[in-house]
Length: 126
Image (cartoon, rainbow, N blue to C red):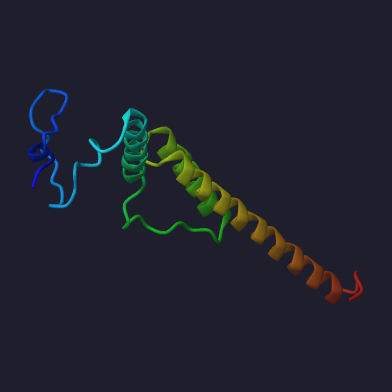
């Protein structure tokens, strides 16, 4: 059954073509007021934008995060991908935050190694 079968018409005057259940009195567009239709349209607009967020393909190689050159390349590529529209800015922000975390972890590892060597040489107490 179509909404138009119940007498509802679209803006162009033709019967509404939305499929409805036998018990339904109208489609979602015809059973709500103008404000409700506006909210539905906004909700749909947000959903459609969320489906079209630019992101890299699933087969994109994993970044190298265990050396400064790899992290530098990841940051540069991410910035370029965001600038050219290949990558959504929100995804780029997460990638950059991950790169920053990898750098901080590397700093902590180096500090630990320095402390260990200083203890071995007797320059620092345990």
